[in-house]
Image 1 (spheres, rainbow, N blue to C red):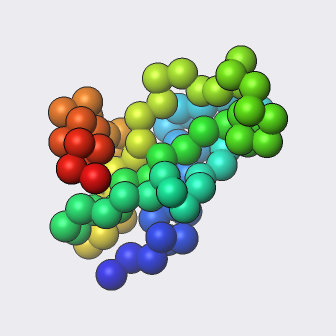
Image 2: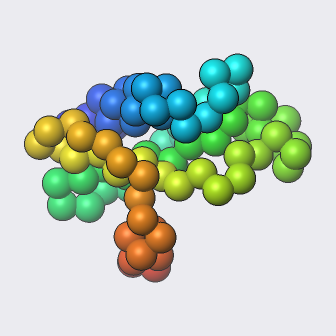
Length: 90
């Protein structure tokens, strides 16, 4: 079973490798932004500036949580359908 920290590390590496967010934006993951489904860890993220200041102008817009497969470590952005299914269930 993948730990939360391993999933966070994989998700942040995926974001960096795929240039999903500008390189100059520091990202933060909070424990409450982690969700688990069978075989999958879902990692939410936002800008460190938003988390530190609460300034809505610093919030990332359109960022979808990253789905990390526990068995392989493969990552991808969560689809909108998956997002609604996951967050309606919790």
